[in-house]
Image (cartoon, rainbow, N blue to C red; front, side):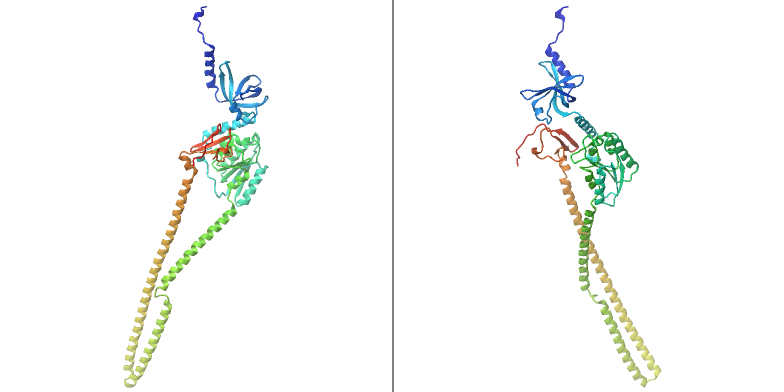
Length: 470
């Protein structure tokens, strides 16, 4: 064989090809195995082997990543390592470059939790825009929980104390174990087929991640997502977060807190109504007093202040005038009777009496017309006063409406979501509390950043402090 015709490559070229083949295809992977041959170099880097029953894999965790790790590595420990495959060219070997480690077992559950959480988040199941509004005054409440647990008693006690008029329907379900996820789903299916409740509470007491795992199952999340009835979750303790909490319409830190969010406080509601009743009575009394003063002012300025008294006086005047006239006519009648015959005298007297009666009737008609004109004038003035009062009330209501619109504009302006829309964001820690200082976070802490269209979950890799410029 002619050695000059053989095509050769250098060791470096082979190593480079292997590097270019391995590293892009084994990026950001999670490897589970047992730690052995753990060594800590004088530079602070950790070298060890990950193994299982059939194979071994060299691993390295450099000083910076090791420093921020909360887990102390030792031989025999079973871990899940997150990192990349890298090729160490001087020796032509490959190894796992580890960035983060968590214990196996519990770590596997946490890994599955993060996987499903990411999947459902990207699918839009956690979006605030799809969450339903919790009714303020529900008439019926459905509860899905274990009938034998302490959570159901806590929920019932709180509802009975705060809002005893509400009707409660309990769907008994296991909240732990393999069958729990199916029974929880069956509860949502029941209330879907029988729409008898205004809101549903899904709850159970505290426990480990294994105890609460039924609430991290996709089948439960799907049942909540497809439920047309608002769902409040109260699962575990305040620090426990499950997939069901993210999918539900409102999360409560405990079952008791879920009950408090589901119903109003009857005593507070009653006090509020009493307060508004007093305010309304006070406003109405003020308006009535004002109207009375205006009416009294109008009446006192008119000639009708004592209309009946004037009428009675005029009647008395008519009576006295009639009596004097009758007396005068009688005297004259007697006088003429003596002179002329009774027939002629009676004719004249009758004629005068007729004239007198006509005079009285004329006076009465004039008085009647005068009274009717004055009464009509008073009615017109009363109608004018009524228009003034209506106008004052409309002005008062318009002022209240303008003030309410101004308060509403202020609320919209101060809404944190409107600030986020302008390009800002808000950071939260694992307890869902806002982070406004570097003092409130540590390296490798898990944080979430709220932006306009969702949340960004990440880990703290570096912290830089700046002096405030104000």
